[in-house]
Image (cartoon, rainbow, N blue to C red; front, side, top):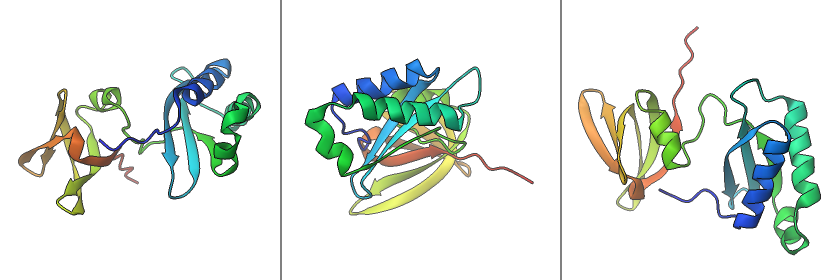
Length: 155
């Protein structure tokens, strides 16, 4: 699976601490080098994450960001939000928590990328199993570029 967090562990720890201090947990970090964005994704299992939580977390991160990484902070936009309904699946645990739900993935297909959407049936050490229409497809983690939960809201 494509690595979405390329930040040094020291910075991940700062983001984690900022989340905890503000009654949230760190869901994940996406460092988008193409769009120059560092997205810190937080959640709270007991209550909603508020705009106030996000503002406090971003301020905490900015105030505790080490001097030696200031150039990284200055060359990227820092944002804090929840993972949302269509949350990205960034880590192994994220996949295991979504077994039985519909996911959408972008996977390597030779020199190109292919999109696949289906019911996540199983997660093993290095493969996810998705039911697409009536066909079971196994996808190695090494071929996954990105995946997210596919919540379709019906009106």
